[in-house]
Image: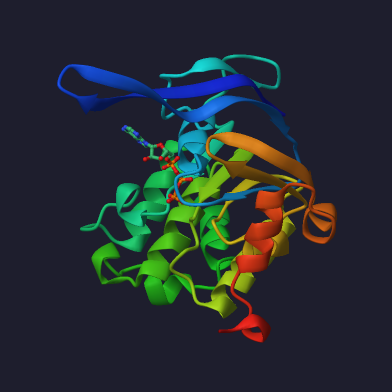
Length: 245
Ligand SMILES: Nc1ncnc2c1ncn2[C@@H]1O[C@H](COP(=O)(O)OP(=O)(O)OP(=O)(O)O)[C@@H](O)[C@H]1O
């Protein structure tokens, strides 16, 4: 279980000559991200989703408040893995798919066969892709490879920050279904600015607005009986063919 207590991330913003003001990207938030489910986080652009992902994954340690992993401030090496929206960050463009799968397997002491199975669970055929260089893959294929590498060590949690943003609806459906099938072994924190996609994938939803969790609840309650006006607006404005302008 990941627990955050009074988590605050503050930036100093320059407002003039020698004048600064505080900007709270995360403003005193406390919650729990449960195990064995898909925890969905959504909210508008700039609401703090990536800031939160960076902190809980351990990439950003400059914050106040606490992040506890199974009630401890320290987390084991393979406790949590992070998949960024931009696959260029985690992949080596001049290496092959095979190099990535082999390297991730060796580094994590995982047998290659099981890593290949994970690659193929994303609906890409290993023999077709193994000798391809990453810089020849499509954006969606790169995102699938980045996802595979993150799940190779079987982490307890995986954080996906808009990690499937380059996939077409059919491949997105497959990947979200894959998340549902692995959530009992790898708990998921799924971040997406589209509330419909989050609702499709998640068991439980957190709504972020201006650095605060303004509402959290199980998916059906959030979508059918939202309490907060901002949540209602997110649902209302989400693209829907029947409401087209
Ligand atoms: N280095 C920084 N200095 C000042 N402000 C920052 C810095 N990094 C992020 N912010 C601000 O923090 C807020 C939260 O940013 P964050 O990237 O977490 O938003 P987000 O919800 O992930 O947005 P998006 O969906 O657009 O990616 C934004 O208003 C952003 O401008």
